[in-house]
Image (spheres, helix red, strand yellow):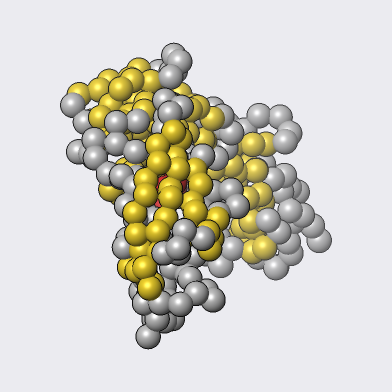
Length: 308
């Protein structure tokens, strides 16, 4: 013996207003972190009930009312005193709405030195299935950076007070992305660590991507050591020239004491010369670099090669 199907009613528990399902498919949407009650429409008679989510029985779903907070398709069967079960009721598809904001802060890949202008890009992406509202990105520049402005006209509102940058966006639809380009300059050489954070009004299920940190090396002056010891201990095994990265157009030549060339870099020097095949002693180098203004500068000095 089969019982008639029961019709479900749904209402939110966050507020007092009652929400009824519409025509098929019956879809109910609630914000992340809230719940909804599903109830049997006609509870007359001596029946027990079994609720299902995505076709699987819910262990605690044996009452006429079921409180749901997990996305899925909810249905119910009724059971009379004789143990006869009805067909599965028409279902309600529960959708949990959320906004998953992801922020990324990335500096220009090129090498820069103190006083050179370069950009950071801060991108905001909504990975969720609903709109995010009241979005704010906070970026506190470290002391070694100087804020110079932005590129273009950013969406939303930008407010800069000292080293603190606040970027507010009224709303961001699901799968929408916005980008802010910030122009800065470094005061001195060294490592610059910069972090941007994003928040919104809606609960975010993944807080791990609400923060993004960029690490950039600000290259100082070119520094050439005067001693290399290629003995395999990992210290001074090669001629490593600090700061050469900011001069992509350069060349290096090395000569012995009699003026014979023993090494010449093929293109940019790769910090890999170790004096292989040469005797210990003093050698001389000629380093040519093209400055930012296009002028060529040459440096001549000496290197001592020591082999243990």
